[in-house]
Length: 280
Image (cartoon, rainbow, N blue to C red; front, side, top):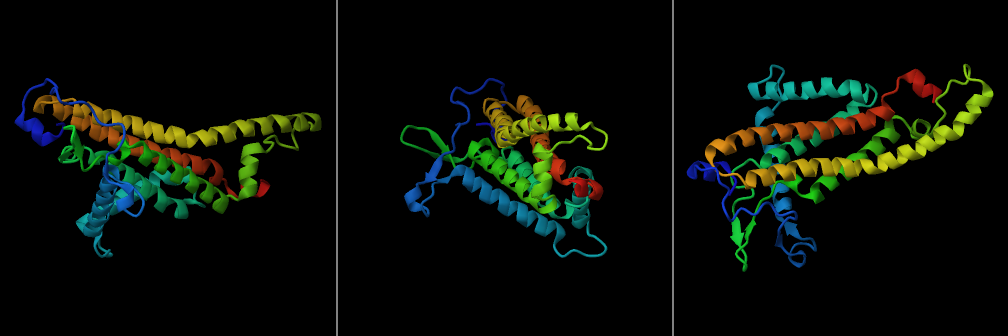
């Protein structure tokens, strides 16, 4: 057992003999033929619970917004304001009103899922199967590669949508394949010679974009799955507590990195001023 409450009860540092690490795949709690044709896994259960708690928490903190903010509303406004100041220069003023709500929800969803593994009961309570293996009811969402791939695919789908909406297909194609040399200051023969070079660079950029979901999903999954296995093998109050704080910081950092990378991807296309967009 890897949680804080069991750690308080067993104050020693050796890993228990039955600690075998976290399963690389989620456990199926309800088979597909019993749940609308889809398997119900412990990752899905955790996602539902975390999403519900997140909604209820912010509803409780803000309730009915007032001109003079309550303490909870002030905390939420400070969080949103800090994210807006950080993401605004990256995304750009033109796209910020539409992109910001998506980035806020993405950050909070990933953050709470990253921290969910630190809660007592997550990855601990469940039932034993015929082989004596513990099938736990809840598993941190981002320790499941399916979840991180889904987040990455949704993020890149949003990237394409926002780029087409706020920059347009012409600007997008120019950023990928267009000749960036100044026609007025570049000799014609040099300018024409740069066209195939920039086109080739564009092909490389398209390949790079295609691998972005892979990098986003594997980075988040690797850090969270590794941290969960680390906590699973630890026992003892004094050795466990520092790693809890470490995983708390890692969870926040990974949510920040994922969100900021998505914001950068969007800003690279959408964050052009009016004159530059007009030239494109």
